[in-house]
Length: 398
Ligand code: PLP
Image (cartoon, rainbow, N blue to C red):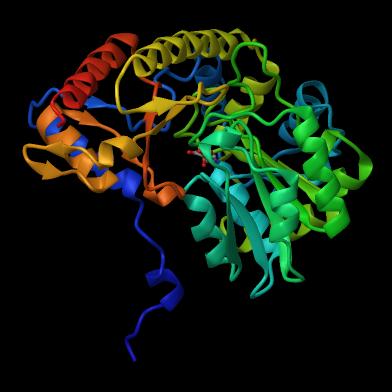
């Protein structure tokens, strides 16, 4: 019969994309919308990286490469892992894929059997549960409230473990909260993962975007036992402003890397050859761009945080990394706008978009139905304009 896949039909369309699409449409119609939805840096990919791609084309580097990525790129990734993350991987432990998302999807294909549970701490990036389900796994949520700075504790993870638990997803710096786990917190989490004998899927895609005195620590760098159980996932999208190039990678045991390559060999083959050359240049070329971008994000974070802190009815914990501000709007839900109780975060987001021309991300799909996420990957002028508008909205509530 012409029925369709139940698994595919169960995938929830991304709410983030829906609101961004609506904002784009309004902009196209000449409406001056401030978009706080951006999930990508507002910088161009650096010129040396683009030039490397042009050179690859000129030199005819346009054919299949090894499935897991060309050796020279995997070696450069090993160097980066050693220098930046303090983790030692060999090239045959690296798999390069079509973006960080594809890397994560490969990980779940390689480690999950039907019914295996994956512990996901909320707030979480909305793609994790869908990816786990697509690999026949079962997402199990634990919640990290504002009082714990949106970070779960080792004890919470331990309590959520059952005999079916296969893995725990650790995303630091975190999307949407911007929180960064400390070495001590990671040590405690590693201890639980070892005791319960589960994998840690460490999504470190925002690793370079950390502000102030915070430091990025990779859980796999802590000791040999946790190294064996961790799949370290990263990519070039956020650090080098290369979201469109689609290059992500993982470091894991050889055994897992082999399985991921094998899956990828049938579903996608190698990632784009030209993008691989560009990625190689990104990793071995000058790194000033990364730090300049980070400094700019830090200024915007400080400005946005100061503005939010001065507003009534909403509050945020100062983010330490990535480029998002996670805002508690629970008080707003009990307020009224034009005589009607607001009630839901979706309603709040709609009012902001329609009446105040500000696009924000309601976080129900991130596991928090009383929070919104604002990205500061937009210019400071835009941020200022958007903050003024949100402030006006809050003033108009009764
Ligand atoms: N992980 C997190 C937490 C993200 O926010 C993103 C992008 O939004 C990714 C992974 C994947 O990035 P990409 O597939 O663009 O490399």
